Length: 329
Image (cartoon, rainbow, N blue to C red; front, top):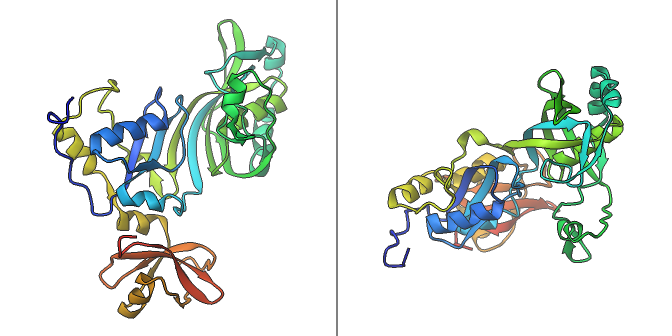
């Protein structure tokens, strides 16, 4: 499509906002960003948390000036549904990798339902997790997945994560796949950012002595946002479908304006006219407790008309802006 043929940019909220995307399988988070740059005709697009190509579900995308919010959004909790296959291990800890080990039918049969329950319990709570070797974590300046795909051994250090819920959604399903005995588990996981569900599958299988990997993953919630409000930004299975003016307008209409997104994601403090003036000029004001009572966190400062003035934080008895908004910073 030439520039002359391109439809006009769709109307977007002043300052942009957040767009909740239901990412399909088979595309990367970068593919979603690229598509939205074409649909919305803006380069200012970013996302809060990558999803692997195999995974589906919620990708929180920021548009226009709201990309500045990404570094502050309190999206630290995530919810997933997943399928874990016990009995087979892969080099990527998911179904897209190469099989590295297959347990014997006798070993798989010996894994009891109670052992599975105990194994899940051992991976629940505050745990130390070694990220998967094909993660995006940098090792000596290069992504771990780049090193792994180049055939280099990748040694990643364990890191603390919190798995607040890891539970079975149905009874374990014992079956055979390509004549291999396996146990498929449908699970739900609530966890902190930085938790790898693939690593949970790997570690559960290793703990049970039969190996394990992930065969399906769907992210259903990120912070206060859910996939129920997600949109398909491709408009169907054709990832390269032309962008019509009507489709672009429909996508733009789903952008959650910055002030509404901030209200959902942050505690809120109401500011009077004098406080707004100080904050707009980058000056501190007397500290007051945020709605949650946590004085160390970032929260939103709203003006008398409910407009977003700034993101704020309390330090040493004073409230200081960490991101000015009203002045277009």
